[in-house]
Length: 139
Length: 132
Image: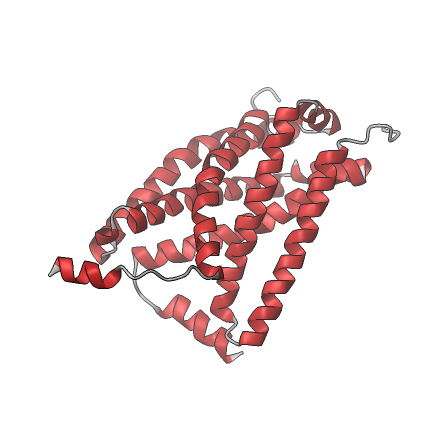
């Protein structure tokens, strides 16, 4: 238990601003994605194991709550990918960029790039929810 | 000065397991970015979950190319994800024995989930089920 406390205190107590947030977000988005990945492998496996169960799961995924979760998942995947590219690029090509200044600047760029990809995707997914679940936009 | 530190740095070390696992994260990520991003944009944004049913999956998997695509996703994403979980867990688990147990547990979990996914990919959609 003391290890858990030490690690969590380190995770939250360290005040590295952008570089620190990038590290935490990379972990949270990675864990979030892998959690859904496991669920997703099982739900797709249902087309073979139990087709009726698959239809139930799809009906659940079509609810607004899961739709919001889907939008969050897309953010996780985009951020994790772009931030991963940033980490790999610094490590392999520009190790001098591992400084506080460049870390802060590049993290902001990473977030902006994530938003540029994520916001249009969110628009279409939110539109889908509004059309199918609330009958808006001629749904 | 730079030359000296460069010379000191370049020491050949035999890659251990974690070195290979770390490289795996990098190389699988290069593949996963196009694979997963395209998968998400196609299925979640363009097609959308409201257009999903058994027929959709059956039609998609009628094409062997999509089955190969999904097999690549299953293999690379799950292995990348499980190794990521192992790396995070290593931050919280310090004991040598506990880490061994955790690693084996994750390995067995990875094997089981991948096997379930592979079974569905090979088996395909069972449509002889009486659907209403």
